[in-house]
Amino acid sequence: MKTTSIKESEIRKEWWVADAEGQVLGRFASKIAQVLRGKHKVNFSPHMDMGDFVIIINAEKIKVTGNKEADKTYFKHTGYPGGGSEISLAELRRSKPNRILETAIKGMLPHNRLGRSILTQLKIYSGEEHPHSAQQPQSLEI
Image 1 (spheres, helix red, strand yellow):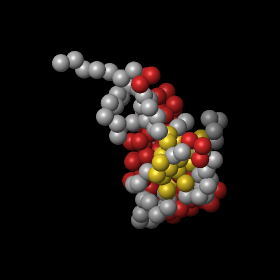
Image 2 (tube, helix red, strand yellow):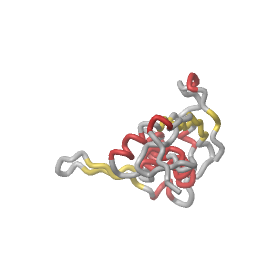
Image 3 (cartoon, helix red, strand yellow):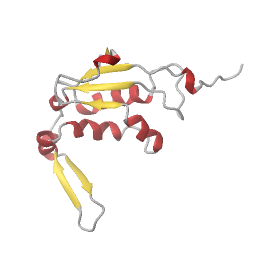
Image 4 (cartoon, rainbow, N blue to C red):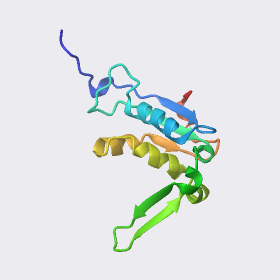
């Protein structure tokens, strides 16, 4: 028996809408990363971009457990000497709530050019509305 490999022309990408309201950050992010990567499909190949498009709404209403709201920090660096800065989860939720989910999901994808191209299929919105109704997205239950 031969192992068949799927061709790029045979890949079908679907659109999904996931509601982040009341979901726990890590568990929600891991499910989204699996759909983005395409691991839910029968013919998954780790070297190809087989995943679907995911739209996340209500990103500002994501939950965290424990004391993470006050203790968790995000570090960034500008690339210049002394250019490092930290921001807490509570501050980030006030200023850029989409960045919380984006960072969590990005860390669960491959850290190479495949992961960067997969991340372009992720659309995150703070409110209930999104501009992708023409794609007729299906509801993703998590």
